[in-house]
Length: 51
Image (cartoon, rainbow, N blue to C red):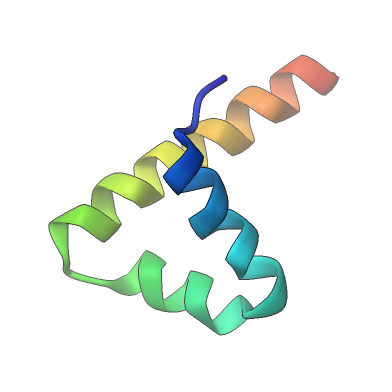
C-alpha cells in the first residue's frame, strides 16, 4: 500500500542483515534517505492500522 515492490524487497532484506538497515539509515545517499523516509512512513502507517 505504501511501498513499491522494490522498497518491499529492500526492506525485507533487513531481516536477514540488520546491519544493512543501519547502513541505509545513516547513509548520506539521497536515494537511501528517500527510501528511509518511505520505510518510516510504512512503519507508522502499519502501527496506526494495527492499533
